[in-house]
Length: 65
Image (cartoon, rainbow, N blue to C red):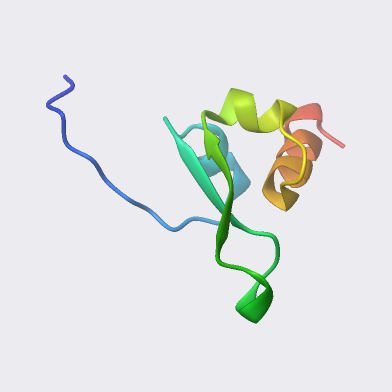
């Protein structure tokens, strides 16, 4: 049942990311080179997005390579 609550999770496990309702990807890298929103949307949209390291890795996991 959707009660309108939100849960924010910081996650690096791509199997969990693939099952999320929404993804906010920060980057483009870590540390001082990161911290900008490079993507926001569903995991399906992330699979089609360019400019996201998370999207690049998620495509490999989903394709099984």
